[in-house]
Length: 84
Image 1 (spheres, rainbow, N blue to C red):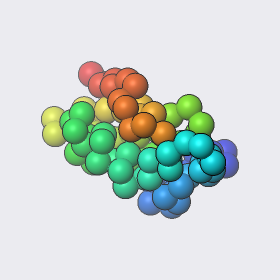
Image 2: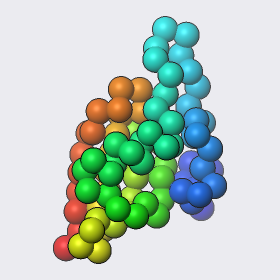
Image 3: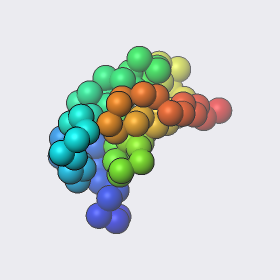
Image 4: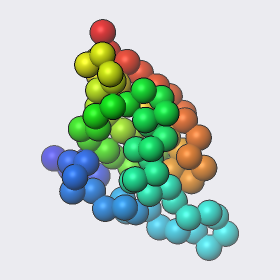
């Protein structure tokens, strides 16, 4: 597992993102999961964050895989993908 991919339960709240002097603080892991829940996430299994996006993976209420990408600065949902 690479340094940027870690288990959801081991990932720190800042996930390696530095707070920019002129930008808002980064979205925390907890907030990213809350946002993903608004898109149908019920059980999170993995969370990865880099400068581009939070990538939250898990399952929806039907047991289908779901992946939600979230902008780490604004919290805007960038993409939602569901498995079959």
